[in-house]
Image (cartoon, rainbow over all chains, first blue to last red; front, side, top):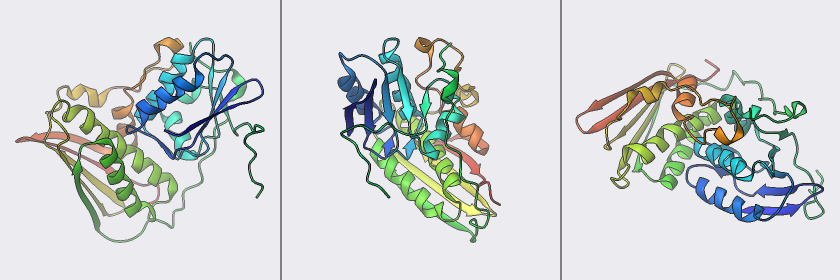
Amino acid sequence: MNLISEPGAGALILRVQEERIDAAVAIQFKDRLRELTAGGEGPVILDLSQVTFVDSSGLGAIVGAMKLLAPSRPLELAAMTPNVARVFRLTRMDSVFRIHATAPETALHVRAAG
Amino acid sequence: MCAPPDDAALMPAMAPADCSALRGGDDCFRRNFRAEPLAVRDALRAAVARFARRMGPDDAGTLELTLAEVLNNVVEHAYAGLGAGPIDLTLCHAGGRLHCRIEDHGHPMPRLAAMGRAMPATDVACTDLAEGGWGWALVRSLTEGLAYRREGDRNLLTFEFRPACR
């Protein structure tokens, strides 16, 4: 599970460098997220811009991660692709997370123009 | 209640369905594979790739989610404690619909009521949020004619998937 951690302004950004958070990787996802957020503080923003598929196992792992970080560290979601947004909408979990339309940039992560 | 601040509802909009996309005659996809997560992933990607061009991305995404949920159930429940047995997946496109059939040789479904279970609640404290239990509610909301039966030592699950464009 390729998850990159970048300190941002006021939040830790976790960029998911995988196309899928599904039953095959849900446990690794949650374990890796736990490692990367251990001992820190402040909100955690999950950059989902590279993720094109989440099933209910992946959704469960994201909710589990949110519960793990709560209440001291809110888990927020950013840059959902339409397929991923659908799962959150159908399960009404879009009402539970703070959702950002785009992922924050950091000094470590400057997107190529064009 | 577990909810974010009010200013946060920023969900991407779905692209409108391309209603010229669904065409073609009768056509079946069939695959037999072992009930393990990576094999399921390969099978459902192949199945979706086979029909995606005729559906558009929105319906293809819905189909992939539906198949993932039913196949994950077979892996996690039907074959629980039995090892990774075989799954037969058949999808036939006919009359603008996709007729889907999933067959396995695992345990019979113990509680048929599970198929009718509602979507887990979201109006609860964060610590009480469910971390699963969406599968059947999702499948039911995305398909038509969902039916399960036991035949000998086999579980047969059938449903129809109707793309938005007919």
